[in-house]
Image 1: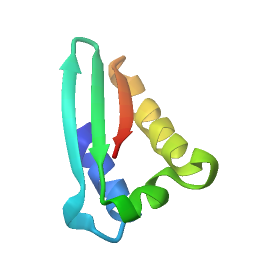
Image 2 (image 1 turned 60 degrees about the horizontal axis):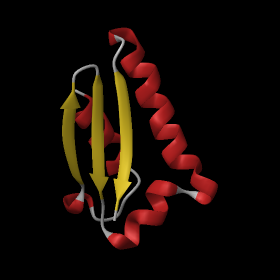
Image 3 (image 1 turned 180 degrees about the horizontal axis):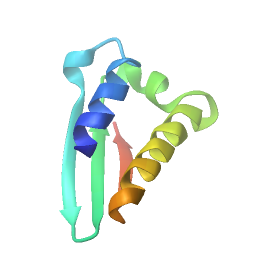
Length: 77
């Protein structure tokens, strides 16, 4: 559910949609999503001063609040 949401949102940001990779690590009440994109798309995902990645994390926080689950989004690469 969270993986699909991130994949949907990031799909609109990047040029190489086929290189989006999200790994889920479930740890009880905490879920870690590790996002990998093409190196040339990294700036598009992070944004100026990290604004876009902060916004993505805020969306996840709001969405996961209904289930009292903590979702952490990490960008790798």
